[in-house]
Image (cartoon, rainbow, N blue to C red):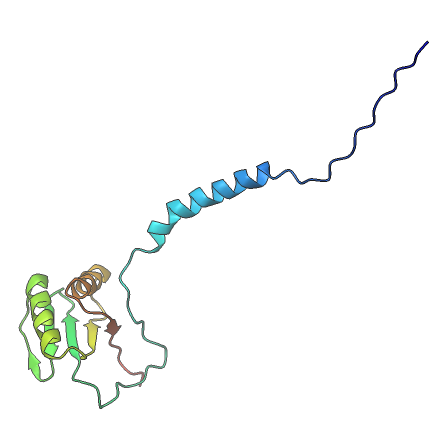
Length: 141
């Protein structure tokens, strides 16, 4: 009688990477879905808690203002434009940037103005070609 002997299998010392590939694909899909949401918004230079004055050797700033009623104004040096709509303000800012391309552009908003009015102003400035928008603050007394 011949006896059948089982062959012993050699143990496999490899890592099964299929579950890791599944996890990586899920993470890739999550990042692809959330990336467009994260990058939306208007790029601004937010003021610091202890803001410093602008250096005196810079050009006169272009100040885009919005008052408590939501009216928009543009101050260029010593000249102040009357209340204008956003389209006219964009045109005025573009003309000013052609004349003085290095002039800083800042937003001066009333403390009681709606947040939407400030965001609309900042988006208009960005669409007008302003590379960087600063926010004007009142020094603490």
